[in-house]
Image (tube, rainbow, N blue to C red; front, side):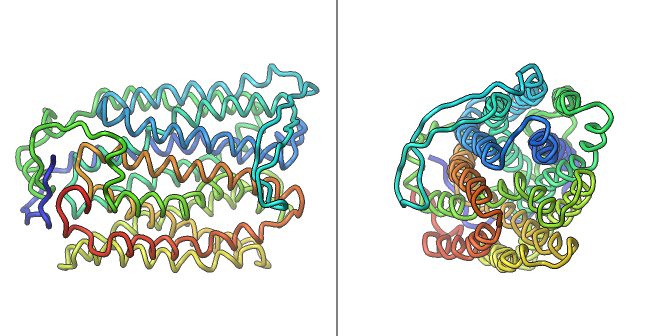
Length: 463
């Protein structure tokens, strides 16, 4: 079993910056991940018009991605621990790029064809499980299949990236590195609403999916030429390698295979999982519904919605970096890991609360600012929540734990997205959804404090 030092050792000069080159690669992997993921959200109004989709149809498509991404996250995390980052990440990027390209093939489906199926679902009105018959255009069903493939294959990206950060960074830099590469989500999300409407206007929606999906293949080539583990990298200086090792928790060299169920012995895992259930679905909601919220609330066309959506993600990008920087800065000032992480989490949780007022904003810039601050806080929250895993868990379990948290977050998000579509179909209002998310982060932090009152003070199985 791995053993951990309670605090990282003091280290000297890094003696190089190759670890930040790795961070750049991770940045672009998540940027491409989000570019491929968000194309559908930007084109939602146009595809709904061209292909005859309702709000409920779109809600089911978004739910299908979330459910698939949940399982992809869970399986991807486990496979990443098994394969290693060098081999695992390019496999997943290649597969999801193929799935992204496959969205364009839905153009071959007849617009008038329909799909029907029955299954159990939780009813808000009856507060129980009822049998629901789904009837939607076959084009929507085709997009559901493509989204399922995309979700299953994109799930390995974040567990792999967190594992790479744990390998390449000392504890005090992990939240910053996580925030920096996680900013790639916003870079992809900014590029998508700006570039996708232009591609759509000039080449149509099919070509838009083909072009955006193909970008992942370019990243795979760069990864194979640049990446290697710190122990084997031929261009890593001895001083930077020593800097990385000196700032990491001490672990035994023997590789231990940890059974999945044994992860539930760790209170930190339960804290991470519950926080993922409560607050995790918020980001999926922002991805799939913010463009629609802005378009409907202010009556804007696709290109204008794209610009304001890009502004939202630009604001959100700031939080991941600031949240990671804040924790690292506090640790550098002599704060404990416990105090630094939880202070950063509290600041992020409080910044989300005003999102309740977004549907009541009188101007588009005010609505985007309110939701953007909430999205920014979510990114900062995620950077520190991910870092709690690497702070508390054995190295060989990190991707599996991150994968488990992603699974529960996106599985819950599947229900949230489906229910959101039904709410919009019936009420046309986003008020209840924004109200729900406004308090979930504070509640999550309370759970974390109860389950893990002192980060880094325990060694071994139940810390």
